[in-house]
Length: 210
Ligand code: B1M
Picture: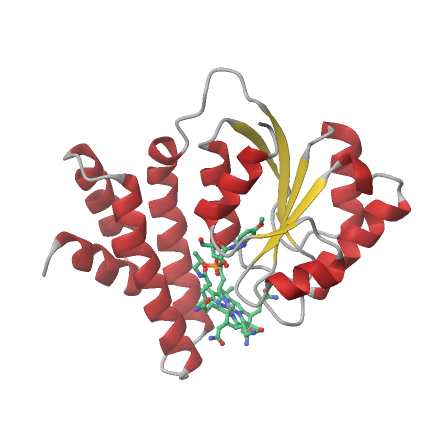
């Protein structure tokens, strides 16, 4: 078994401590954070998703793997986010109301931070009013919204509506993403951008400051 497969297996078994130790030792040995992410962690999480879908594993097991994934991401964070000295600007990010999935959101946050943008993270299950408050408080150029459930993706629209209502819609670019979200849906709800993954989200976010 190669090291990427070994990390993927530890993730799938939810062995946070062993996974963290191996991720750290791979980083120290010169493996790139991107390779660890793309060749071990994301495929590992996809395998978990498949097994969850087939009812081979259930919420408690998935929660344990999610905890291991977030522990590994924490270790990768400094390598992914080699932030510049002065941030070029600010973005606000959250997972929308009703939705507790935070792994993709955390990844998007780290990749955006890696382009030198300061990111204010409002966490999960975030109501539209909280986003409005944050836009007033931090004056970000970008708001990033993550939704992983077909039942919560509509809350991305609720945030856009709340920003309009507060007279703030034109002051920010709204970027949306998450597994069930599509470009067509983003257009329908009046978002400025849809990006399918964290790396593209970071590219698009950075381009708003050029
Ligand atoms: Co949930 N879950 N889950 N879950 N879960 C999914 C999403 C599901 C597809 C599983 C399945 O059935 N195959 C399904 C949704 C079905 C649907 O609506 N279409 C599902 C369900 C049904 C549920 C519950 C309802 C289950 C239940 O209770 N019966 C429940 C809902 C809870 C809630 O939120 N209210 C639930 C709960 C959970 C856990 C808590 C156990 C756990 C989350 C823990 C956590 O996040 N801390 C969990 C997990 C882990 C998953 C799966 C297995 C993995 C999600 C993940 O982290 N993927 C997932 C199955 C799957 O996706 N294959 C599933 C890895 C991550 C890197 O990818 O988040 O897609 P992702 O992010 C990507 C892109 O989407 C994009 O970039 C990232 C990578 O580059 N992206 C953005 C994401 N956000 C973005 C924002 C942007 C741009 C890009 O803004 C600019």
